[in-house]
Length: 205
Image (cartoon, rainbow, N blue to C red):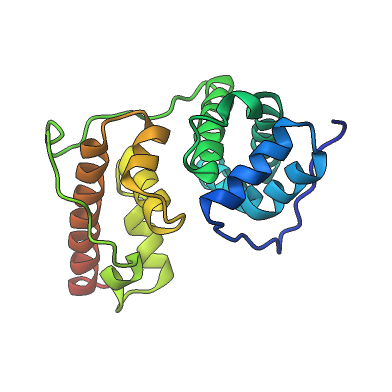
């Protein structure tokens, strides 16, 4: 496989049913580059956006995307049996690539403890309502500002759950923590966002 995969900025993604993804994964494992390009079309934008949000550099985000696709090309035959969600698998690989870039920058992925204390051992599933319902009266700038106040692991979990539509199990696999921890992170993130946005509404600039 030669050259970088090029992703147009207007690429649209589509969450396919697992059987379709499995079919593409099987074709990729068999050496079908066209199947890999279809995976790029379907999931490339999600990987690129995930990396760009964490790294802030389009060039670095494209490197993460290319490295993630290369890893899929090399490992597709080994991931067939254990991959329940192709997008979650790709985002998990991308997360490792992002961590490599951060280490090269002299930074670290902030795997910090939640400020509210030890993560709960159990937690109920989060409310699946879209994030926008938390801030119907706020503008995009205030939302982004509020999101930046969250601990990194909470913000990442909220992004994967809300914008990528991943399950708690998929996010747990990506973040390499128990599923209950993901539920706790989402619960605490929503609480903090509500409070931050409410405070902002009471005290506008």
